[in-house]
Length: 100
Image (cartoon, rainbow, N blue to C red):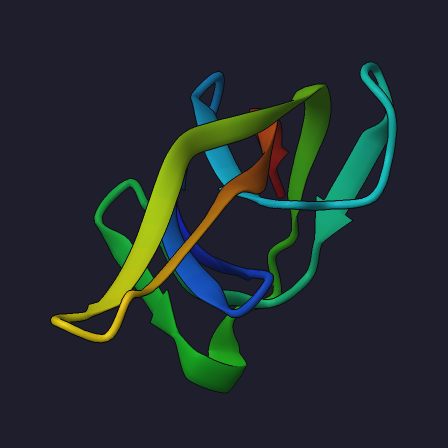
């Protein structure tokens, strides 16, 4: 069974027992979360799209992680202006337990 689900404004293609990194979702490791905004479901050759989809995706939070450091460096030549700013995006690692 395959589903396309919208999580925090981004679309992900998920299957049962799959682990993936999604934008930060509130919760601790071991918490159960449910995503109701399912856009497409494909099961046994049957395809449901749009308002015909009546499925939800259930997942378990594995942990909260941070992405790689991204550095934004600005400089104006011959002026002595330099600005260095960095950040690490927060992600949540989830494991899909059920598509129902």
